[in-house]
Image (cartoon, rainbow, N blue to C red; front, side, top):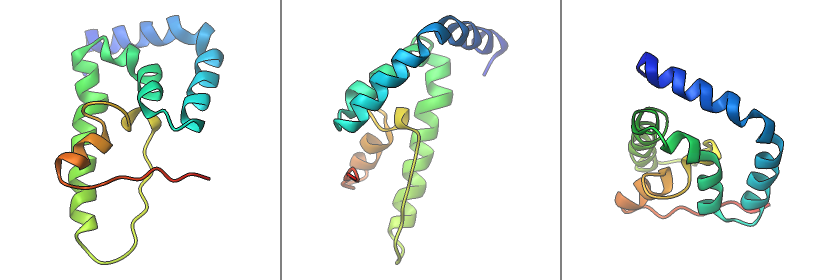
Length: 110
């Protein structure tokens, strides 16, 4: 990330700290309900405000992970993949990237 993007991300993070507990409660509730889109919106809204940050922290990583997962799934054996919740939802999320590669993703419910 460029220095201006890093500064902006840090400033947004500091600004959001007072509401972090409330946001975490909402994120846990969305995850528990299986609402990946709501979860992604809660977690990724700040990041999405900067295209550079979103590309570096979300979309590029999601594409690389999806490529790795698709290659690994083509081999024999059991695979368990865990990623941060913000990487699961919406357009450009890991699930979306895997779907583009013809894969189906199921959420594990416990």
